[in-house]
Structures are given as C-alpha cells and as structure tokens.
Length: 620
Image (tube, rainbow, N blue to C red; front, side, top):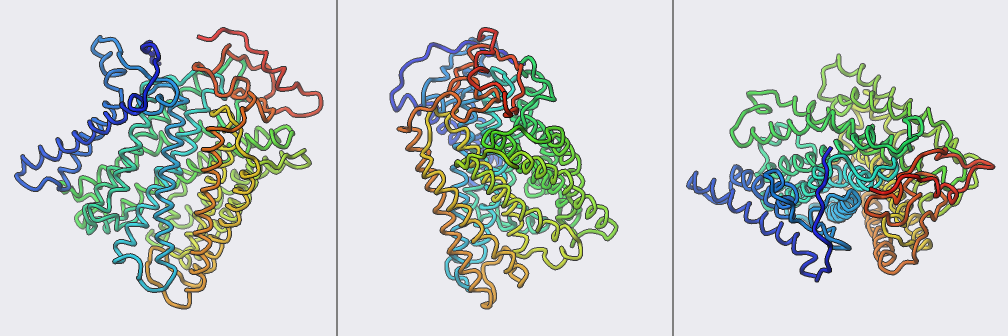
C-alpha cells in the first residue's frame, strides 16, 4: 500500500494555469511521438511513418504523455529520494493534471467515456446514413465503411462499455461504498486514466493509416491483408487494457483490505460485489487479450507468423474470445449492480434475496469463463459445440437470479418513478430481450442460420446498449448529486429516459427481423427488398442519437446552476450517502462504523438522518 506525500499548498489558478499540465502532457507526448518515429526512420534510412516507427513512436508518446501530466514530479522523482514538487490542484484544475484522488480519477474516466461514446456514436450515425439506401452512396468505398464499423465497435466496447462504469463509477464510488478514504495504490490509480487517452486516439486516428478493415474483433488472417491502421488497433487496445488492469488491481485491493469496521462480506453493498467480481474477471482475462495484441503486432512488424499461414490463424479467435466473452459480463455485471443498488432505495423496500444475488455474481463469474466458443460455432470442430452450447445455456441460471432479486425487490414496493428508477426499469426490460434472443444464437442449429446477420447485431446491442448504457445513465442520475453537489432537472431527466427507450427499441428491434430476412452485418450494400427496414432503422437511429443531447445539456446546466443537493436526497442507507455531497478529500469527516442493515427499508427501520451520526473515528 502506497503512502502519498503531502502536496504543495493549494493556490488559485488562471485559465492557462488550470490547463497547463494537460498542455505540457500533450507537448511531451507529441515530442515523444516524433522522437520515436524519427529515431527509427534514421536507423532504417526510410520514411518517417512506417508501421515499426509508429509503434515505437506510440510507446514514446505514451510515456511522454503520462510523465508530462505530472507523474514525473509526483511519482517518479520520489523514487530517487527527491521530494514531490507536484500540486494536485483544486477545483476544476484537478481534472487537468495527474491526481491521486480516486474521486477526481473517476470523473476523468466518466468524461472520457462520454466523449468516446459521442465519437463512436457519430461513427454509427455515418453508418446509418450509408444504409439509408441499398447502394454505396455516402462513403467513398466499402473499405471506408468498414473503418467506420471498426472504429465504432472498438471504441464502444473498449473505451465506453468497459470503462464507463468500472473506471468511472468504480474509481469514484468503491472507496465510498465500503467506507475507505482512498484506494490502496493511489499513484498507480493516478496513472491508470492517462493510458485511456492514447488508446482512444490510436483507434480514432487509425483512418489516417488506412483504417480498421477487420472490424473490432480483428480476425486473423484478415488482419494480414489489412492496411497499416491495424497496428493502431493493437496499440490502442493494449493501452486501454492496461488502464483497466491497473483499475482492477486497486478495486480488488480496496474491497478486500479497506472496508469500514462492521462491513463483512455478508453486509457489503451490491455495487461493491459487482465491482469485485468484475475486477477479478479483468485480472484473469485481460492478460490473455493483451498477449494476443502483442502477438498480432509482432506478426505485422517482425513477422512472427503466430496467426499467419505458417502459424495457427484460428487461434486468434480463441485468444480474443477467451477475454471477449467474460468481457460481456465485465460490462453487464456492474450494470446489474446498479439495478440492485437503486431499486431498494427507490422502492423503499428491503433488498430481496441478498444471498441469491451474491450467488448470481459468483455463478456468472465462473460460467462466463467457459462459454467463449459460442462466438465461433461455425468455425469450430463438432466436438466443441455441444459442451459450449451447454455452458452457454447454463449461464442463464445465475443471470435469472438477478431478475429474481430485482423483481422481488420492487414487488409491492412504494416505488418512486424518478429518472434513476426509470432507467433501471428500462435496462431490466431491454436486457430481458437481449437475453431471450441470446438463447437462439447460443443454440448451435439456430446459430448456423443467424450467425453474421443483423439478428446478432440486435441481440448484442440489446445486451450492451440496452443493458449497460441504460444502467450507466441510471447511475449518472442517481449519483449526480453526490459528485456535483447539485440536483439535475427531473422533468428533462424523465423526458430523456422515455425518448431514449422508445428510440432504442424502434432502432434495434427491427434488426431482428432484417437479420432473419437475410441482412448481413458489416456490409455497406444490400439487396433492395431490405431497404424499407433499413430506412426505418436509420431514421430511428438518428432519433436515438439525438436523445442523448438532452441528458448532456441537463447535466452541464445542472452542474453549473442546478439547485444545491442535500447530503442524502434519496434517503439511502449505503455509506456513500452518509457524507457530504461532494465528499471531502478523505471521503468521511469521521471513519464510518457499519452498525445497520444498508438495505433495510421496512417498518420501524432507522432513518438515514439518524445513521449520519454513527461515525466515530476522526478523519486522517
């Protein structure tokens, strides 16, 4: 566990003083890029930008970016016995520099995930413009369309779905919900976010080097024929994976070793359980896909022929999906945790089946590691199909436990249908459709017909967007008063929730129909008989995209001018609500001692106001 040295005294900042560390990081990063590419070009006596020079330049740029943001003064210099000279900042200046406060890091993750979501959504809108008509008439070529597909999928999965809840809410709220003052490795946590930006930029800038022709899954041997943009995919996913791995280490350490007195595993909040199980999956399987990225990169640069004609091309699929299917639950387990965190509070009813929920977490964690082959039934040996079809069907049992718990919790409760609860209910509804249609694609005979069609696209988006993104917005509205100290506009929150759920279902449900009728995914041109369905889908895609501007404006305006929030606006009993909004530097003025049931909302249960006085130990 790392002890942080004292930062220099806080000071006032001009606009330039606020953003200066980020500008310096950018300058150091660009300098590192040209230094690395220049050295290789000089050594090879060739052009400045080649695959190997860009790879070396990316590494130099990433180091320059991280160190330039403040890690050099605050972390590296003390290794050599020098005192830290870094000011972590106050106010908005904190978010533009290297900072070791988990709450600042959580906001950095949330904002970055939001920006990545917007950029990936823009790529999706361009795809839907192309699919308005059966002919290729928007993009210059099918390769350009493929690049939009690859950028959209890579950013949505690796920079949004994996990062938004685990990196954003996980960093901000895990110490708060377990009663800790910070995370065990604050310096490591401080640099974790700084690896996200290079990863996002590498993927977003891949069109400058030919784009991503093999999609977000980057199947070999297609990658052997892909343009040089493919190396930016490998580098980007590697950088994003490194960020997630560092976050997982801190989340696990916080939950295992820094819980407040009285918080046993049997009393731990659902959100903490979700983050723990998710982080364990990250620790187990992120190294696998990271190694795959390195192997794919060396195939391009040396070449090593791991996945080439002289190697084993199909092994890429195993390595990718060994992480890729646990990743689906890395994405959705935190969403379920948000369901079970908000539902008791808004239903004013005790959580139903705490033990069943924990069993669901553990069951999904175990079984999610034994289902990856269902992503490649059509490319698998027959003896692999039945065992993996069986494990895939079995995972519906622990998944069903979460539905048992959420339905039991809201049943006959005094539900407040405010914005967070609406988003929870919509997430529950959407994921149900994703799960039901998942039965078809997990069944081998049906999979052979539906594989690589828009049926799979609909299923996947109902699972990830319908389940995770709606839960993310539930959490954003639920915890908005906590990390801003302000209340959002409830009317516009409800309007956005209804518009998003209508737009979502009108967009993605028709994809099941077009998939059954033969619409293949990842194609820019299609047969005219599918044009009406695609026109409908595109129009609702635009409406769904526009719907996200409402919460964006609501959050920005409310953060700046919204009414001040009380410490506990929802009357919740979990620990994050037993401190001020926003929390002080060390989270709690006094160390909390858990002496109550955090999910008890029955008759005669103590009020949240009486719980606020249960802390005993002075702040450190």
